[in-house]
Amino acid sequence: MLKTTTSTVDGKPIQDYLNVVVGEAILGANIFKDLFGAVRDIVGGRSGAYEQEMGKAREIAFAEMESKAQALGADGIVGIDIDYEVIGQNGSMMMVSVSGTAVKFK
Image (tube, rainbow, N blue to C red; front, side, top):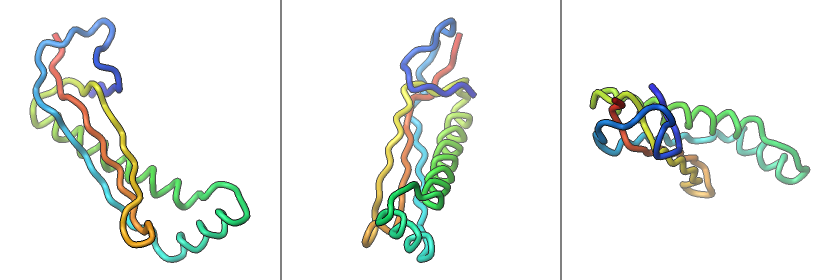
């Protein structure tokens, strides 16, 4: 399925706008990842554990959104917006939300 953040696709005119589709994923970071993330924050550098969790959450959210678009008979999703949030007590959970418009191309 074609997915894009743009509202149009060159060479693929949109025939029908089917509906807005959304995918969400909320993942908790365990205590060890929190501890190592805090150490990285103090000494600098990147936190590989958090990057992996964010990647996992993004994949889940995109898969959910695409599944909903397929159920509508869509050929693609345009105008995709990706939102990242840290939620929960002391930022212990990460949320990724993606949304876009499911479309049929001509």
